[in-house]
Image 1 (cartoon, rainbow over the protein chains, first blue to last red):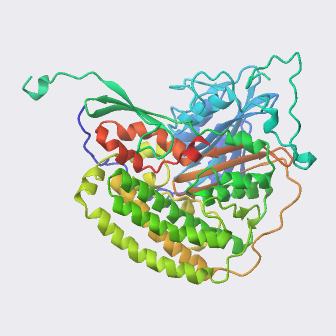
Image 2 (cartoon, rainbow over the protein chains, first blue to last red; image 1 turned 90 degrees about the vertical axis):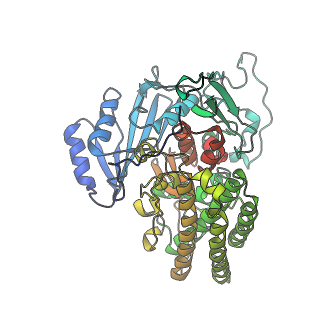
Image 3 (cartoon, helix red, strand yellow; image 1 turned 120 degrees about the vertical axis):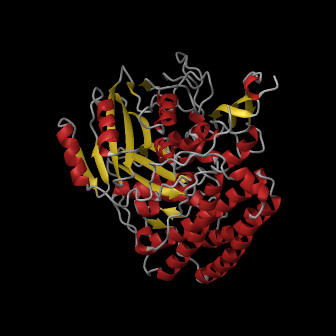
Length: 199
Length: 369
């Protein structure tokens, strides 16, 4: 393999990106609404859209539409959440050309925490999805490499789940003037090892 | 065996660079697959500094999170405090007094220069220019002193508050600040000569670590590496926050998209930072430095994104109506940029690794969280 020589890409001129040809939020929201009538897209502030209830079935279709047709070219952030009765993934996808950002939230059933991966659309989602899998155990289908990224290999728990118990002596009882509670003995029927995900 | 076409291929092998390696500047590993001297593939391994930051936030009240945000990035603490308080302000829907916004701009720009100087120092050490290391560290001291005058701390500031900043600027701050900026700008020109006139530096940076602009956008690379690729996206003008809409400054863009272009972007940003501080100090309005904050937290979510020295910093805070957040999500610019490292490294030589990875300005505190 030889050292690559730089060939300046011909068609890639981004010097006017986000300066000319900026479409208004109303246009974008209207087009999304007409393409996906089931999804409630709202304009929150001047640069912010929200689609808080995207069904899991059409999630990938919706994301593909956003990228291909509406110019949302940069995935700012994504993450998971444990809503106790269900799971949730949220995405913040921004458009450099239209200078706006859309927030997408998608709820997943408790017994099946899986959703389609978007890392083939936006390469920036790759590690964020790995991290969400790492912390919450949410599985991203068709992810190129769904492995743990922050915790060591062989970790058998998902630390950000709400039922993951922190060690008691790390907790500070802020209601009780910030005193640390006395160390509690584990009950006899508590077979939990340190850091067990199922509590 | 004599002609180039029939060279015997060498076995490819993986080399672990790190976690203890001079170029890493923190604890992380870069696994590099090499064919002879040429890099075929690479894989960054991070997580050595993972502290469960987002879980930590779920057990703290909103004001208690500000001091631990300092620990996200130990060379740019102020910008992380700021992005957190902005997210909470967005969630609460409160406005910040104009004076507080201007003070924040001053603090953020001082922090940006200090952070870029640490980058310059460590990058120059990687490339063997120890003189520039000493000079950059000396100049950083001036900016650290300014921040110390502002809030009393040198590294972990705990200065922005939800609704404003903790205290007003000291009386002679503007005067001292302007004096030191003049000195700094004069010296910066000298350092450019010192660094750029060196042929060794040019050979090791120019044409190395090329990243296509479309790849940079798609892979989520932000900040100086993105602007070095010719994409004029700086959130300070692209999606203005705080008081940045009031100021007149340039977005520093380069076209070459190599290591040298990233170096130029950072040097120019320091200049623009000086100009921003001057404008902010000149236009600083009078008034309170902290606004009224509601006592009741709504069941809502808020986010903020800012231009960190390293790229796009993002905080998502979801509240459930109690005094603690239900979920906090942090987007660290370096976490995403380092995931794009294999694209930049492929095809270059093993000796280019310190130069290419150094140009990204790694900070493990924020990428591992």
